[in-house]
Image (tube, rainbow over the protein chains, first blue to last red):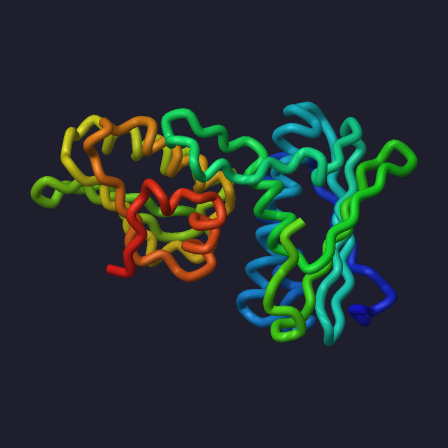
Length: 151
Length: 103
């Protein structure tokens, strides 16, 4: 169990490509506060970035929307909750494992970002509540679990 | 952090050098450079990534695009990628068709 501060930090941004940098900076600050190592910091940043990018590109499909990111950090790691009001989408169901055997000329790359996100974290949970998609991601501090799960 | 992209030709190799972060916001610039590189007709396209500190799946899409854009006989090399970036490339299985080297 990851022990985290009770009071979360919150960031709310418009669902645009331009706001992805703000989300990354928010995550990096939390990771720094938790004292995460380089690898764990990279993993949580990548996972949040991929899920947020997916919300911008495919969730709201270019329309207006907001993304709320809540974060808690503690000595054992970081937990991030991402919320949006786009149509229901469970990333676990939408994940597309890489088709390594398919020639590059015929390869699909859609869904790879979600695969990267889910394989970068130590724990992932999706819920649909009050017309909101809610993703919860946890990355433990470096050394507690060197092998992230392969969902 | 923005992405800096340069394009040059060294003998029979087209060299693309990237510095910065490769994500959904910056990848379109890399995409445009790949299109130019594909038009050079060299036998190798070398993508130097030692200066890339972060790469999201948008960068993977650019690498797949590069493979689809160049002729079958053209070799694509990714040179100097840091460990998390090369891990991302391997996770996508692109190391089967792109040569990953340290230098």
